[in-house]
Image 1 (tube, rainbow, N blue to C red):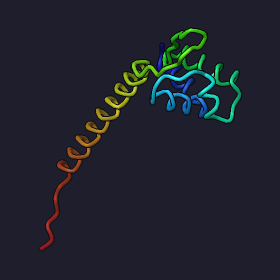
Image 2 (tube, rainbow, N blue to C red):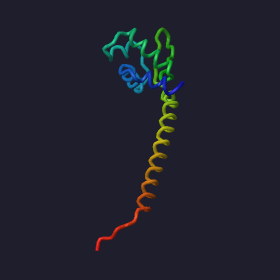
Image 3 (spheres, rainbow, N blue to C red):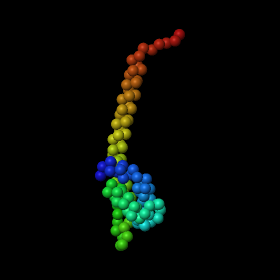
Image 4 (cartoon, one colour):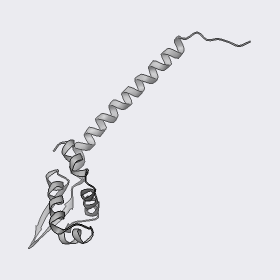
Length: 112
């Protein structure tokens, strides 16, 4: 899974809401659909997108299928954000260092 696929899956507010619901514990489609203003087929389609992105797993339970959140599915996104954050911090440190060098290179004037 790529961080792009995860971001695409999370771009939809209904999918984000479904994922939040599943963080509380596994649920069947019917229960999820009852909590949202969308049809059961629409919830199933959203869950399919989340499953393809690695964010949701499905467990067959008799005739029902229980969906549960997969927090590990966020790992590629987390790795990407950690990398970007590292780059941002490095750029910040370089800018601070440059500004300190500039400040130290300027002659100082004293007011008497």
